[in-house]
Image (cartoon, rainbow, N blue to C red; front, side, top):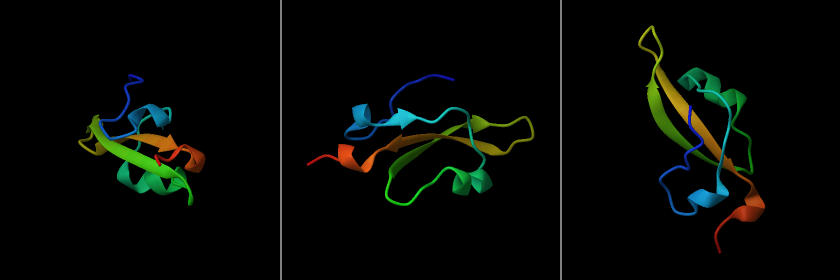
Length: 63
């Protein structure tokens, strides 16, 4: 795993959450009122797609 920033505007404001997530696990990390960026991050050994999740606090939004 790397700590690379996502390829979106304002990427320096995002912080990567540790780990990789399956699609059905995303509801465990997504919170209302917070910006998220989700990127494909490969596949698990069983072929399930995995995603990296980045979050940005509301007070860090671009003006």
